[in-house]
Image (tube, rainbow, N blue to C red):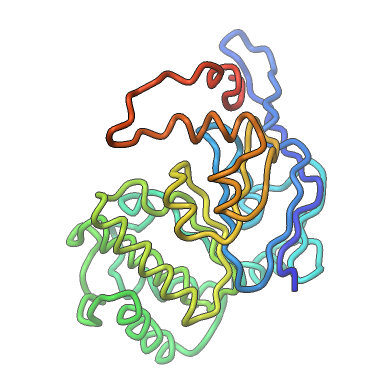
Length: 276
């Protein structure tokens, strides 16, 4: 069953240069794919290829220039405010930087309960109980409810961000570079947590990253983006061991490996991300 379908989505931003001229930046150009219930789909590509723009469109932080975004068969591309509130019960996002995605002025308990308060989910007692339960699910003690974000490490903050995203019982989690700001050992812990949660809660993941090894570990399928276009999509092992597109081959060749002499990819610059 397809839980999410992206149909020929484009997104164009208009920016103004120093001299006052208007310039168009084509962040997405005709992107189409589907996401099945319980699946994990990885989106890879270098900086500027449109990965985060795609995530922002799905969560409705921005609207597409054209195309359709279907959730359970319903077009949410230009949803109204009330519809967006319902959408965000089902689709939540975990951002890249756990240091800036949590309000430093709010206690952990309030951070966790805030989504349910905004969406008018549960009673206040139920919100507190659910927040304490989710802290346990992500490996933290419930006595942290009265503490502030600055008292925690990066890995702990990201666990709190994951717990907050789960507060409204979403079907889809968009994970936008969720481990790139963490130490390698902590990355492994967070990835293992995400793998466990996916199985226990029957979650569907859209996992955005530039780390091919991480995407291969956590994703059933992988989609490769270049300059706002989807150039290749398929089984993760197949894509990352036997890629068919030249850009994918260049991305894989650019990954540093122990014992492998460094070689500058010959065509990577001309295959790069968005202009401007």
